[in-house]
Image (cartoon, rainbow, N blue to C red; front, side):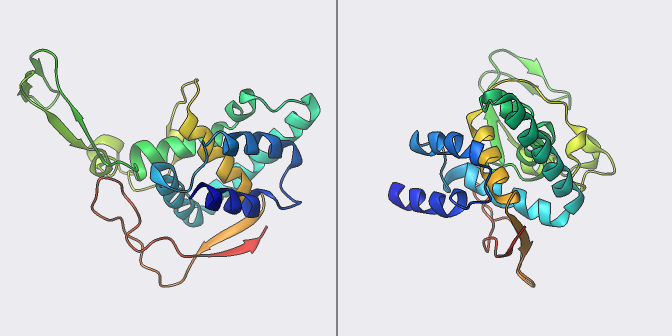
Amino acid sequence: MWQYHQKMAHLVFGHPKFPQFLVKMVWEKIESGLISIVGTVGVALAWFFYLLTKNLHVLSKIREELDSMIAQVQYHHTHDDVTWNRCKILSRNFQDLKDKSYPPVPFDTRVPIEPETLPSGHKVDSSMQIIFNMYAMGWMKSLWGEDCHEFKPERWILETGKNIALTMMKVATIAITSRYHVEPAKAHPMAPNTAMVVHMKQGFKVKVATY
């Protein structure tokens, strides 16, 4: 399976148009086993590109940020972790995706360590397990307002810090958006499945063109 991932990576990152200063960084991630097309990161990326096809103005902002980042990195001759922290717009997009629009794992649980009263007025204690649906909460007007169905990355305030999954998604997104236009296939149904990981029920069929 790992050999398959390496072969796919060669196809994605081996193109001469891919910014060369990023190649070394990308392959370091691949060789250390951080980049994979399976699991929650792969699921999140599929939903992310689906959202971009429906919000082309967001894609334009990401590409503008990428051009600026490439210019800064080439000027300063550095490509460390600070590089990824410059991608503020891209980070806000992922924040909206994973915490609101399409969280890859839609359910989570919590157990209180002592008796507590929730904002809803419900009383809980350590003998109880609280299960909440983050996917459903992400589309509630009572939490997000009238624009809850809109993809608005600018609503997020970012926290600094390292996040391996976020870095993986940034690497893959930069590699694809810098080289390709991605459009959803016509008449292909788009819906989430009902499972512990929110895969696309029918997959994400796309038309890819050179950018």
